[in-house]
Length: 542
Image 1 (spheres, rainbow, N blue to C red):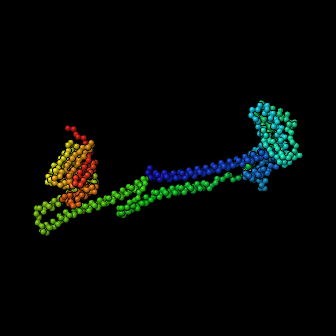
Image 2: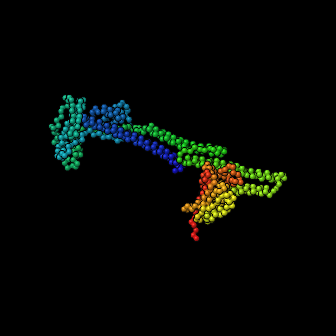
């Protein structure tokens, strides 16, 4: 992934993460607080309704229940107003607290029914259920009246729910004005049973019996209440801002930290490359940038360092080339100038031998200039090639013929090892120039009695040409520099014995232009082998 996309992705990730985290945490906090507020409100309503119903259920009257309302308001923090279904007010927490009653809110009233809910054992016959209902009606009327009397008398009593759901009142000491109820003697029992019998045809039976029970006990049961909670303009539950603010600050700090780290990671190498580029522009070719990692910035840094190395190497090559050219031309030009001035002044006579020497010197300088021009054209890719099908065995034979006289003069045996013809597509004249340069070097490096061999080695789809000699060899530390311009393994060799110093550079460029390779191997005292590898063509049919 490119660096631009990574930066964009990181920034988008930070923004989306920050927004999502803040929104999620805020929503979560709001939901939790709303749920807690709703649950607390429901719990408070349940507590208020439960305690009011328990009071009416156990006391049989709403007398003296105002303290319960005040206590519930204090415990729950709710404003409570209690009235009967007919609208008769019974208690108000604001009045009990000594404050002006506040306007009621818009919430609907909650109904509190203190009458018992009948309970029957499973599996009872309908007739048994009816009888139990009639008995429960009589018992509740008696118990409700007794509980109301005990409440008015201020008796200490406890209430529990009986087997059928009817309250059972227990007192430590019964006031004299409250006589023990005798439900079995109630003259209304027969009437109640008759009313219950009307539910025989109703389905389901139990709700019908509950309805009859409520009707028959309405005269003694405490009135149902309407309870209103809250007041007008009451502040709704608020969301705690501290967690949300903390989350927002944390996300902002994370985003700022991420941006700082990202900018530092990006700008530091960019700043280093800027300084290095300014140094290169001012001529400091040794300036480089430190590189770590494998991302695009690191790749850019390595490319910058390679560019700086290439610039420095180019400057060094140009400097060396200028110095080498000046060195190669200074001495012969000085000789030519000296002899010409001597001839002009009459100090030296213009003999044929002197003129021939001066002509040879001029030809040598011309050869150096021609070699430089060929090398410049070859390195620029502008050297002209006339490619055709070339038989390398014939090319080696023609090279041996051209250098046979030179080899005989040096006392060196020059031979060709090419058992089979090998064909390549190449410029025959340029290849002959390469092989001739190698043969000339080999003859100069091989002492009298030695041997120079031109070998043609077919190797699958490759053609391998070897120029081997039995000369003194080249030291291993000199081998990497053999193809450099104007470089000579023997510094004492002059132009007469060592050539211009450009032949191997030109040879390597020509072979490279033919999509081939040239290599050298040498051992001191054993000789040197130059190997040219080219792509071969099949032998044409006869």
